[in-house]
Length: 383
Ligand code: CMC
Image: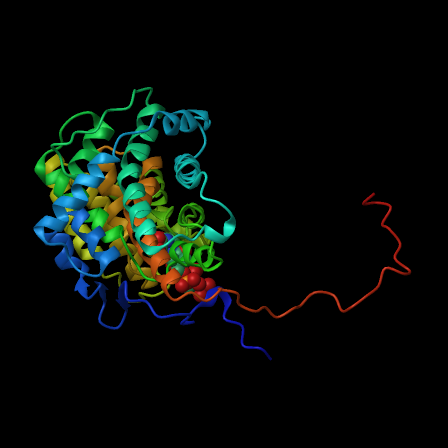
C-alpha cells in the first residue's frame, strides 16, 4: 500500500531560510528573529525588508525602502477602474486578486516570451516592493467603495501602517491603533509552507512570473480554512451576540459538527505562537475603544471551546475582533491578510527561484480499471 499523506500533512518538501515554525517550543522565527520581538519593536516596512533580504535594514536602507514604498502607494487610475468593474457584492478577495492581476499584466507588458517570465532577483525584489506598496490602497479603496466613498490619497508624511489606516478611514489614527495594526501586519507576514505560500511556490516552480504566483496565493488564502478564517471569526461573534450565549451556541455548533473558526492549526497543536502578541494588541484596543463586551465574548468562547475540545485559538481569533474594533468591515479582514502576507509570499517565491525544482508530486490512481471504447453504449438517460 502506498503511504498517502493526505493534505501533505507532516511532509517536509524543501528547505527554507525565511521562517522557522517550531510547534514544540511554540515559537516562530523570521530569519532567526522571534516574531514577538519584531512585532514589539519594528515597523512593518523593516520586517518586509528582513523577509526579503535576510537582515534587518540599517537606517539608510529603511529610508530607501520607505521612499520607494511611498512612490507606489497611490491607487493607479486603471487599477481603480478595474476594481470598479468587480461587482460590489463580489467578495473583496476577488477584487484584490483582479487588481494584482492587472498590475502584473501592466508591469510585464512587452517582457517577451514565457521563457523570460520568472525574472531575475533584482527585478523580482523591485516587483515585490511595488506590490507591497500598492496593496494598501487597493484594500482601502475596496472597503470605501462598498461604503459609497471616494478613495483617499496617500499621505507621504505617514509610515506604512498609519498611511494604510489613513487611506481606509480618511482620518489619522491614534498611535495605539497604529501600533496594534502594525503588530498585526507583522504577525501575518510570514508562516513557512502554509497553503497560500506553497501555492505561490508551486506556481513559481514552473518558472511562471511573480505576479501569477501572488494571484494564485491570494486564491488559496481566500478559503475559510486558511486566511478566510479571520472574517469567519467575526461571523461567529455576530451569531453568538454576547458572552452569555456562548454555552448554548457551542452545544448546537458542536452537535452540528461545525468547525469553530479561529481555532485549530495544522502545525501548532498546543497553541499558536502568534496569539499572545495579537491578544495583547486586542486588549489595548478593547481599552482604547472601551469595549469590555468584546473581551467577555472572546474569553468565554475561548475557555469553553478549549475546555470541551482541547483545540486552541490561532492568530485569526484575536485579529478578527481587533480589526473589527479598528473599524474595518468584516469582508476587509482577509484582504488585510493579503497586504501583510505578500511580503512572505514574495520572499518565498524568490527563494524558490533561487534553487528551483519543479514541484510535481505523484498520486495513487484509484479510478476504474483499464477499459476500451469498443462495446461502449452511451447512457440514454444522460444524453
Ligand atoms: N473546530 C472544531 N473542530 C476542529 C477544529 C475547529 N476549529 N479544528 C480541528 N477540529 C477537529 C476536527 O474536526 C478533527 O476532529 P476529528 O478527528 O474528530 O474528525 C480534528 O480536530 C483534527 O482536525 P483537522 O481539520 O483534521 O486538522 P487539520 O490539521 O487538517 O486542521 C485546520 C487544521 C486549521 C484546517 C482546522 O483546525 C480548522 O478547520 N480550523 C478552523 C479554520 C481556521 O481557523 N483556520 C485558520 C488556520 S490558522 C491561520 C491560517 O493559516 O490562515
